[in-house]
Amino acid sequence: MATSINTTALEPLCRREAAAFLAAHPRCQEMATATAEHFLYGVPMHWMSDWSTPISLFVQEARGAHFTCVDGLEYSDFCLGDTGAMFGHSPAPVARAIAAQAARGLTVMLPSADAVAVGQLLSECFELPFWQMATTATDANRFVLRWARAVTARKHIVVFNGCYHGTVDDTFIDLVNGSPARRDSLLGQAYDITEYTRVVEFNDLAALELALADNQVACVITEPALTNIGMVLPAPGYLEGVRQLTRQHGTLLVVDETHTISTGPGGAARAWGIDADFLVVGKPIAGGLPCAVYGFTAEMAERMQRAKNNAPHGHSGIGTTLSGNALSLAAVRANLAEVMTPAAYQHMLPLAERLASGLRTAIHRHGLAWCVTQLGARCEFQFRPQPPQNGTEAEAAFDPPLERAIHLYLLNRGVMITPFHNMTLVCPDTSSDDVARLLATFDFCLDEIVAA
Image (cartoon, rainbow, N blue to C red; front, side, top):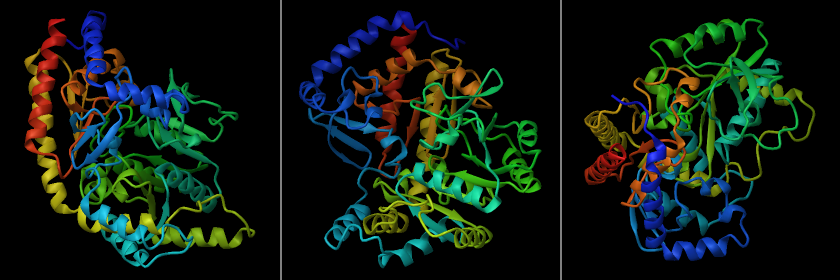
């Protein structure tokens, strides 16, 4: 079984696929040239250029599990906005709610009538009694870190190596040769974020206990499973151990469910019985509209109110003018009530299992020592024999040239997966035919890669 591929030998295949992409997308090329006149990297947000394509795809329409580019080509979408459209593009109930609310007002910095229903739905879904809203998961995580420091009167936090919590400065810390260091890719960082952020490996309770030992840590912020470094699942008993250690040292536990909501209704915290002090959900909560929420226990609510009431009047550094606007409330209400339903997961989870099994079969048939990890409706293949146990192992399995070759090959045949790693998502609109299309194309791709 081969773990690695000679990516130098893939260069002719990559050149062929790049040329084929350009030939099939003349309208995208025109738009890319025009957009580059005013947008940095030729896209509204530079991450949009991080695909394997020689120029950006421009989207004409996205519905359900598919989108069509401006050249009229249709794609089966297993990226789904990198989780933002986890429940499909423009779900009909959400689209109707947005259209109706748009005619009644977008934002007033006052609650709309939907606030009552949204609070009830969030509490029922995630089993936490109190909530606040934000515009992105980055905002929500940043606000929760402020609350945690305010209610504990502690300055330090703990993150896990390879974590992803949006663009919160405090979390851009990696372990480099066993020592904490600012992530190399972080631009414009003026102060030393290692001063108040401690970093340990995921699945290492001994390291976490050492980081908490001086009782100076306000909170541990974690995904239930690492997702953006390549999926890393928790070892049996690990999350229970994290909860025990945090309680022992008076440290709060913040669970970021933005990616792991794929696990099922209520996310991994509900499915796995994680007793969080704070829980954050971003991207998919409003069906693709920019929005995030964070929930917390009754004890946290009391401590938060006390901290706020005891502070001088003025801006708390928590919240934005658009947080909880009427449009996002309408979208969240429709999404929770009619889209993110148990019935949706009953479709998504078995289909994702079929996809994961098919990926394993194709990988084994081609004699490749790669693994496939599944987390509910989310699965990912990684270039290593066994699933990684921490961020260091997951990062060591990255092979960017090989990823780009696979991603571009799939795209040229009408299948999209996430550009940043090898992650796939299925949504309520994903069909068995979509999964079969991905698996067949992936199999053909491996034929060519192994032959090369």
